[in-house]
Structure formats: structure tokens, C-alpha cells
Length: 602
Image 1 (cartoon, rainbow, N blue to C red):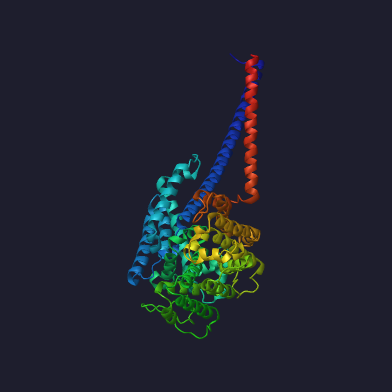
Image 2 (cartoon, rainbow, N blue to C red):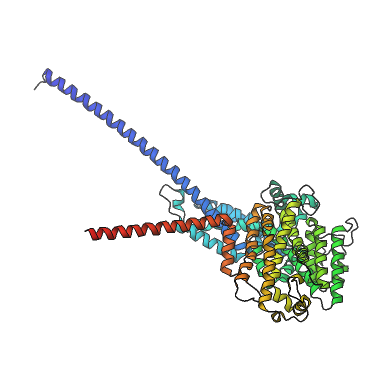
């Protein structure tokens, strides 16, 4: 049946409407597809950002864990130069070449991480292979803990690149991070112990002490390009360091714990300085006879004169081992054979060699004042006035505080404060450092009145003693019977000395403020732990043989100092916490009353 004109017009309109609808549907599909593509791209960008953040977090965690595990021992003590030359060379080259060859052969595998991991491990083994092998327990622990943590905490979306990561991938990633960290520790230890591998010029050595400077990394690059094998290193510096560690022994656990808070290169040289201080003090105080004590003091003074003022152009002897290697870390103008005949044993000689290695940045005047303090101990004259006590504390520990400051400034790249660099040295900082040492020595004297008396020493001023003071002094110094003096008198002596320490504690705190930022918190922790002896002694019901600060309190002091919760800040946080607790308790009380009133109304 033929269409009428009306029907044709209706059909045309319908077709046009269908065409418009199809176009609109096509446009809608295009827009929806574009939105979906944009959304997918946006999701991919977000996933990539999350992946980067997570990888950064795992990297920081792994590096921090390695630092925590390695800081309790000196990395250089895991280097053994007496290893057989041929075996050392074969193991170094053969294993690294095998790892690189495996990296080349594994390129055909579907795992893209494995070839890179093997090649990088081969390069790191060439530099630090034996060191890594000797620290295998630490490497294994750090890798296992980090990889498990990464695997368990990673929860990526389907758009994430980490979505395909298996535990093996995390194991490979953390393994590479851990051995890279340990290899850097190894290289830093070599650079710190054998700086003459880079240059023999002491002034140039001072420029690459700080790891945050370009000079340090240029020196590190030079070391990597000319990396010696272990057997090519002289064993003397490492063996002498081990001797110093043994000499400090269990009697210096507090020193070891405190020193662990410092960077490794700084901690190592502080250990050498403190070992010399303790050894020289024992030579003067604990020799078999007074005559031998006098001779030892003369030997120490002669040694210090040779170290600081000897003619370096007159080379006496180079310390050569049985392997024929010369120890370039030692000043060559010192006749070590002569001192071997004067000192009591080889261990003491090793500790003297350690001191000579770091003497180029120490202050000669401070060392001279230390010998004056040892001479006062040797003569055993009573301390008459309070000012005499302050002078003694300044000589014995104030000068040691100055020497420690010289070490800190040199090893953190602040220049040579021993006298070679007049522009770097700041007398006001050193003066406050002396006050810090003086304050700690006064606390030490107050704490050890009974312990000192038991070994025939007395540092309590006669001015503090009841009349007649000579009788009290005789009981403490000669009779070695402090309890006959009475606990009340002993505690009064200690409190007066503590009050004296409190008077200079503000200056001592300012001394810490003048030190580099990277060591301030560590030294402040040690200082405040020692200062905590004062309240413990004052609050004790009796006068103990030796007051000790509880371990829990020591840890809390160290924690709040290291993380900045000290002084006014700590008090402000504590006050805010108390106000917050009071607010919540008050609000809870008001809500309880309101609920009870409501229940009664119903």
C-alpha cells in the first residue's frame, strides 16, 4: 500500500530523530571512553606515586636498620690485612667475575631484577667481599627482616608495578640495599683509618672528614678507583685499635654505650683518645712503686714533647712489619724502639701509637695541662680550698673535654682545632667545653668519695671538713676508713661538691650548644645521664659506695635528648599532656552526671 504524504513526513522525522540519537549515543560513548581512559591514567599516576613512596620508605627502613645493627662494633675491625695475598686476590677477583658472568647469562630470564642484582653484587664484592663475608650474620638478619617487612606491608592496587612483586623480588631488592650499605661502611672505615691512601698531606686529609661534603665523596671515588686488597694494608692501625678496645674493657661500659651514639669515624678516634687517657692515668697512679710512677710521668711528658714538637724532618724509623710494609699512619720522627724499652708492655706501646696517629689535630697545651693534673695525683697533696678543687677538675677533665672537642670538630669537617688552623679554632667554644668536662669531674668526685678513699685517694677540700680537718683527711686518705668519718659528713661533702657542679652546669650546657648539630644530642644525653647522679645521690637515704642511675632512667634521658624532648620542650609537652588528661577526665565526669540526671528524669 503506497505511503501518503503524511506518512512519508512522519517517517522522515523518525529517521532524523534516530540519527540524532545514534550521534548522541556515539558522543556519549566517546566521552565515557575518554573519562575512563583519564581515570585509568589518573589511577596509574597515583599508583606510581604510591609505589615510589613505598620504595622510599622501605629503603629508609633498611638503611636505618643496617645503621642500628652495625653501630655497636667498629667496621674496621672486620678488615684483616694479614690474610694470605694469593687467596685474598683469587677470592676477590674470581667471585666478582663469576657474579658478573651470571648477570650476563641471566638476561634471557623473565626476571628483570636478577641481572642487575647480580652485576651490582659482583661490583660490591670486588670492593668489599671479605668484609661482607665476615659480617654475614648482620647481612642475613638485616635482609631477612627488611624483606619480610616489605612483603607483609606492601598492599598495591592492580595498577601498581609492585603488584607483580613476589617475596623473591623483595629479597633481591633488600639484599642489594644491605650489601650496598655495608660496602659503604667498609669504604668509610678504610678512608678513616688509612687516609694516607688518598694523600699524605694532613691539611688535605682534614677536608674529607665530613661525609656531607664533595671533598669526602671525591676522596671516596679515588679510593674506589685505587682500592687495595686487604693484604696490601698495614695491620698496625687495626691491631692497635683492637688493643685500645680491650684496654677500655668492662670498666668503661658507660663510655662504650655513650660513644655508640656518635658517628663511626668520630667514635673510633674518641676511643683512641680515651684509651690513652686511661692508660696514662694508670701508669702514673697504679705503677708498682712511687719511683716507677715518677719515671712513667717523665716518659709520658717526653713522648708528648716528641709527638707535638719533634722535628718531623729528622726521620728516626719507619714502623715496618715482618711483611715489609711501612705504617704510613705513624709519625716517622718518633723512635718507637726507644719507647718500647721504656713502656711496661706491648699493649701500652700500641695505645701510645694510637695517640700519635691522631695527635696532629690535638692541642699540645691541653695535653701539657693533663700531665700537671697527673703530677698533682702523684704527689698526693691535699686539696685545701674549693678553688683548688675547681682547678684540679679543670686540669684533669676540663682539658680532656677540650681534647674531645678537637676530635669532634676535626672528624665533622670543622677544621683542625689543635692549633694548625687558627681560623677554625674558637676559644669560646673550647672554654665552654672545658666547663663541661669540669662539671662532670666534680660529679664524679662527689659520687666516688668512698670508692676513692678505699684506694687511698681524697679529693674533698680541707675547707669542707669539720675541725680538725687533718684528722678527717687522715681517715679518708691514709687510714682508708671513710665510714669512720660518718655517712652524714660524707654526704654533706658530696652535696657541697654537687652544688659546685650545679653552679657551672649552665656554662657546660652552652658548651654543648657550640658543638656541631650532628653530635649535640648524643653529648647532651651523656651529660644529662651523668648529671642525674646528683639527684640520685641527694635523694638517697644513705651514702652508697657508688651511686648508679637506673638503666630505665638512662634510656629515657637518652631518648628525650636524641629526639629533642629536653628542657622547656619536655616540660611543655608534659604540661600539655596533663592538661589534656584533665580535660578528658572533666568532660567524662560531666557526661556521667548528665546521663545520671537524664535517667532520673525518665
